[in-house]
Amino acid sequence: MAKSQRTAVVLVAAGRGLRAGAGGPKQYREIGGVPVIYRAMEAFSRHPDVFAVQPVVNPDDTAMFAAAVAGLKHEPPTNGGATRQASVLAGLEALAKHEPDIVLIHDAARPFVSDGVISRAIEAASRTGAAIPVVPVTDTIKITGESGNVEDTPDRARLRIAQTPQSFRFDVILEAHRRAAKDGRSDFTDDAAIAEWAGLTVATFEGDVANMKLTTPEDFVREEARLAAQLGDIRTGTGYDVHAFGEGDHVMICGVRVPHSKGFLAHSDGDVGLHALVDAILGALADGDIGSHFPPSDAKWKGASSDQFLEYAIERVAQRGGRIANLEVTLICERPKIGPLRDTMRARIADISGVDISRVAVKATTSERLGFTGREEGIAATASATIRLPFDEKTWSM
Image (tube, rainbow, N blue to C red):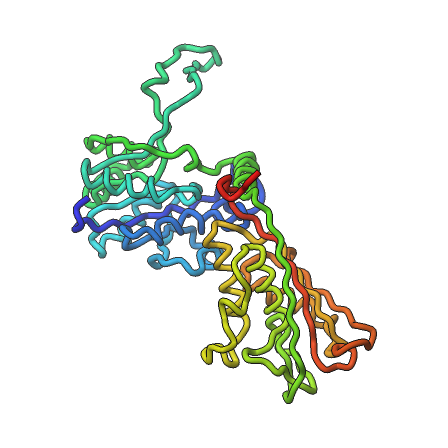
C-alpha cells in the first residue's frame, strides 16, 4: 500500500440490537468483561495505518458510549439515522473534512475484528477501490418459495458470507451513498450493495470466521464460552506486606485515605493492601515482585501513590492477553477499624483494576493483641489474585 494513503474508519453503532434480547443495545453489553463496542473500536484505534475513527451513535446513547470506550482515541461521535444506511452516510459526511483516501466501514456488533483483517481491508481498497471481507459457506444452502418448499440448491462453492470492515476509496463510496439518498433508495443491506448499484466492481479479500456479528442471545453465550476456553491457564498468586506506624494523621489502605492518629513509615505511601495485592498479581504472572519493579532505592518512588503500582500490575496481565478473575486482601490490625470502609476499599480497588466490584474482596482481622499488630505498632496485609491467561502448550512440560 502506498504510504500516501490515509485511512479512516466509520464505526456504525446507532442500532438498537433488539434481536440480542434484554440488556440494552448489544454494542454496549459486555462480552468477556469488556463492552462489545470497546473491543470493536480498539482494533482500529490502535492500528498504525488508521488515522481517524468516526463513531456513529444514537443520540440517546451519548453517555453510555463515552463510558464504554473511555481511553480509546476517536473522533467526536456523530448521530446516526433511522437506518444503517443513513447512519453510514452520516459518518462519511463527518469524515469528509479530513479528506481520507480510504475508508473502512465496520459494524460495532463485530467485536473480534483482527489486525490482519484490517490490514487486508486497507490493502484491498487501495488496490481495487472497493472490497469486502468474505468467508466461504460450509453448509449446503437451499432457496425456498412462499410455501416453504425447496426451489433450488445453489452451488456453495460460489457462495460467500460478507463481513465488515468493508473498504472503499472514500470519494467513490461517499458519492454512491449521496446518490442513493437522493434517489430515495434506503433498502441496501450493506455498503457493498450500494457500491454495486453505483456501478463499482467490488473485490473480495480473506475474512475471518472469528469476525462474527453478535445478533442473538445465543451468539453472546457462544462467544463468552469461546473466550473463557481461550483463557484456560488459571493462575493464583499470593502477596504479603507490612508497614510500621510513625508520625502522621492518616494512613492509605487499599487506595483509601483513612484518618488515624499515626501515619506509615514507608518509602511510598505505605499502602499495605495495594502492595500485597501487586505482589499477588506479579506472583500469578511469575513476574518478580513489587520491589523488583519499583525498587525503594529509586528516589522517584518516594511518597508515590500506590494506585499506580496496581495499575502497572493490571497492565502486565493485559499485555499477556489475560483477565483478572478475583482479587482478595486481608488486613491485620487492631486499628483503624476496617469494617466501615470495607466496601469503599473494594470499590477503589475495582476502579483502579478495571474489574467489577463483585470480583474484589477486602477482609480484616486482628491478631488478638499479639505481636506488633496487636501492640498497634503497624499493619500487615495478605492478598491473593486469581488470573486467567491464554493457554500456551509451549509453557507446559510433562
